[in-house]
Amino acid sequence: MNQNVKEAEYLKNFLFSLILKSNEILKIIMKIVEGNINKNRKFIESKNVDILYAVDNGAINDFLHSRNSGLNQVLLAIAKKNKVKIGFDFNRILRNKGRERALILGRMMQNVKLCRKYKVKMILLNNAKNKYEERSVDLLKNFGLIIGMTGEEAKGAII
Image 1 (spheres, one colour):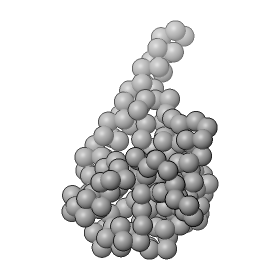
Image 2 (cartoon, helix red, strand yellow):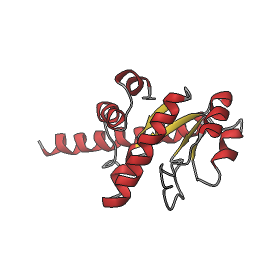
Image 3 (tube, one colour):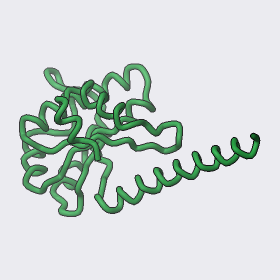
């Protein structure tokens, strides 16, 4: 009985390491880049980027009538032209708490509306750093619904 438990634990750890390695391989193949509010335009204009996520990194304060979400109509027009997809990372929500989590969620909601308006493809990411942060595909779809995607958009946003 003890041998079966050890084998099951080994298999679970092995499968998780495969998932993490596949995430790293996907980042290399797909050219996924973490955004920064000061460098988003450079990343979007680059022909080497397929997916740009966390576009609101570095945003300090929101504007009076809108959020400082890192995207605008000019950047999204360039993203559409260069076929850059905008990614939404669930683990940014998971790792933050309180006011910071609420700000990130609000900025993601605004970015979903902007991406839909300018017809830029959206991707849902699970940027897990360890096995405890790994989430199922259904949870990612529900996360997409929470930030304002339609059911079809959330289903199509899973890599």
